Image 1 (cartoon, rainbow, N blue to C red):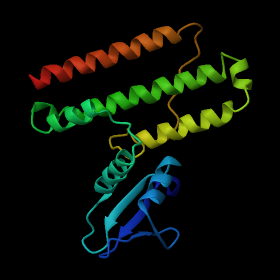
Image 2 (spheres, one colour):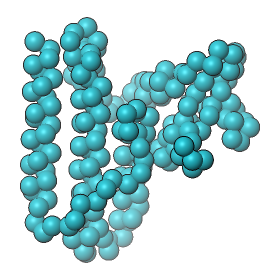
Image 3 (cartoon, rainbow, N blue to C red):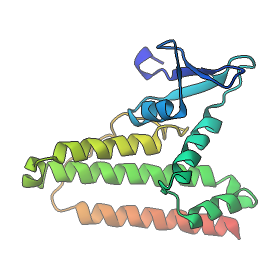
Image 4 (cartoon, helix red, strand yellow):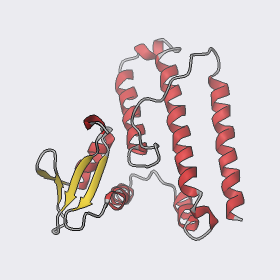
Length: 189
């Protein structure tokens, strides 16, 4: 792994303080969330035991956002996740979530490409670049901490441009999502 792709190492001391090994200073959960939104991978380890605590802290960041009213996860989705821990879907859920976020990222990449390219005047609109950057940051934040290649922040391989296929792409994405949901439903029965 080259230095540019190497995760930012954060060490947790016995006092529960978090130490950024690159900048030699203490950081907060908000700082870690900002690193991730900026496209940086992080790894949080316990200084004494060496245990990887990344998942625990990422879940804490999500819980903090949700408790402040920044609700991204509907209650029905949270209920489904809780249910998945107690049935056969436990094994399939990570793959389903990964595939769903992959499709979301690909769909948003295509949408942003279409907005900037084929829609011409929209790309010239004041504030469009800021909106595009914000959309890309959202995607990085949503996909940043997951495993299995899902957390890659690199560009998605672009397909050759085809005219008038955006409706077909959306239909393909919907069909793939429906197929995944059907598989998940069958696993839960």
